[in-house]
Image 1 (cartoon, rainbow, N blue to C red):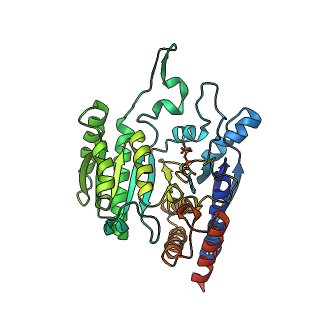
Image 2 (image 1 turned 90 degrees about the vertical axis):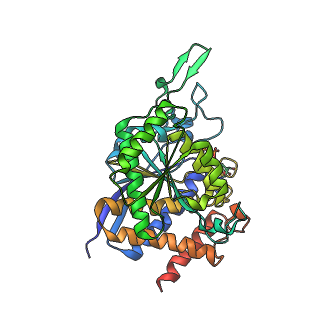
Length: 370
Ligand code: ATP
């Protein structure tokens, strides 16, 4: 069997980003050895607040270009308390990468695993399996990626701009419908895309919905629905099991994905893929969690499941089915670990820190092979 090699740029970043990235790489290495037919070749580069404190730069020289020519980018988490730019904003080279590589599709799966904390008592909470698809290059974060896009009028007023463009919005909605189609085919989704906006108030949001309707016409097999973002927040508490793919603006998606992540445990389960036409960046949706860093306490599963999303992306781009096989192995091992209670993260009141969860998952992968 021939072995296809994929280059991965890895930024471990700051705080727990370093530990959870190491866990994800260990798991990726285990599945690639087992499945075969592909090889991940990592290049580790510096970026983040720790690096900024040492060098005055938020990313290593030349790292953006290297990341741009890699098959995928993997990132831990970035940010440290007290390390800021002069204007008080956080060190955020990852926002620039999103912008520069046009990673418009922020894919945030929200899935209930057995024996993880349920915030809702309704038994249907066990069925939660949805995706928050967060547009990630424009919306209200348009000004955040590049500072001079904000309008600062002396010390009296600051305006951030919410930008919605047709090309990005068309691609985003197409991505949403295609994702719903893929999930339906895999048996994990209902074939439903909900457009989450505030079309009753903002012209930008009415435009977002108009483009949604235009693109929906190309996907007659997929059902469409609409929800205002405030009603969506309510519905994520009242009936999260009723949703499949939620497509939304950047800031709304930022907030709703944390809310939805909280329903199925916490940030330690929140995986994330940021995908553009030519690049993909994979990272846990959580930050560097300074409150728990250096304590071997963090749950590495968001990072590990983000690694599985990266394998799916590489599979989509290359047509190499071995990558899908490896991604499913990771997901099944996580599911099996929770259902048998072999995985008990401290985040959920269990007795396992970062290393213990990783070791157990590796053991599940090993034993499932025998
Ligand atoms: P950012 O703005 O970069 O998202 P933040 O400080 O707002 O960062 P997180 O770093 O995501 O947010 O942390 C939010 C909370 O979730 C913290 O209390 C943190 O301890 C917890 N948390 C985050 N990631 C994990 C994890 N992998 N395991 C356990 N707890 C986590």
